[in-house]
Length: 541
Image (cartoon, rainbow, N blue to C red; front, side, top):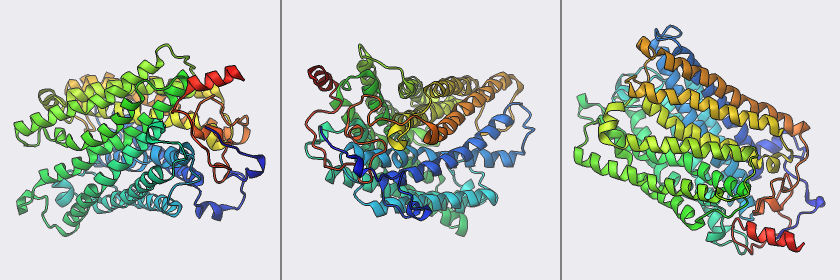
């Protein structure tokens, strides 16, 4: 691979001092990624505040901090904000937006104006959701289960559903942009099986978004009509079917799990290769496993309905398919482990997050097999066991991948290095705090504590105290990167073009990149992650 960047071309997106208007009207994918970074960080902070209040309430068994209806609003808005306004957009909108064109040697995404529009649609949806929160919130849970949400709740169900509906358009625009960019704008020589695995992951995620999000949109429209006009679509008293809502909702929302986790898996593939100095073991299998997850993810929604009245035969089929979808995820974990074996592993901060991801996601995946087993799922359904499993996958997976990728590409994004010591401290706090927060919830859930209750029997208090203490550690771990990454933008050491010694087109341009990424279109002549070739070149030199 070869490209050239001259000093004269460095009128980059950070140095161009055109004022606020230039940022708000920019069509530069790198600037749009930074706008997304600010927005998702704000929503993450708001969602994290709700999580802190939930854990403070559960510190004692009496439910003495907030009233039950307030608690219902807290856990609902925590889920809505974290899922729809952080976990789904975080990696594609921030890291994907910034790094995808660089990885394939393109000057920008295929549709820069649509890219900017997607950001404003996302912000509009977020503002509507926060406005609904300020004006009473919603108490249904983030799953909006009917008929309570559609007929009986007197909270802002319609507004929050509208916010989710609008946010879906932002996801679709981003996904369309990524698909067209990957198909049409790859550098000469960059064949499909020379693509970085991050690109494969974003491509598979975009396919899921394009196929699944319209189903959620239709479902939310029916929910809004039901709640506003009392049409009875989901109300059995009027001949409606509340279980139909669950089928429609989970047909989107289980693939949405892979919308959240697949990009993180792509990040981990990049980190493992870079810090083990090896080509990913079984590259082709890992690439195809992303597409297999995208396909199989549409076939498993029924495992959310084991206790909702579906037939035992349908439950058995969904149980088998749910176990089958674990296979391509296991392929990734085994291949990452094989890549690390006898690799020249460097334990810098991004690699610590990658190791944390592998450990936490493995626990999340294995406990998912428990929930795919009908007998066990019947016992732990709607308990804190489900909460723990979900967070091990989403927080232990998606957020670990997001933080790992953010630290890995931060020198490329900002042109500055961050303090390695504090970054490692933060990674350790996140890993330890996460286990302390959520592992006790497996135990208390198996013992029978239901989720979404603000009061509980006193015998569960010690495990809840451990969870709340862990949440404090976890919160500190999340706060530190906000501090030192912001500090690094002004005071950090200037980053070279390739501070990690990694391979890939994004490391062959300056840090930060010039406005159009490359002065000359790069030509790809080697396989992805060709560290053996780089080693031979350095020996010759």
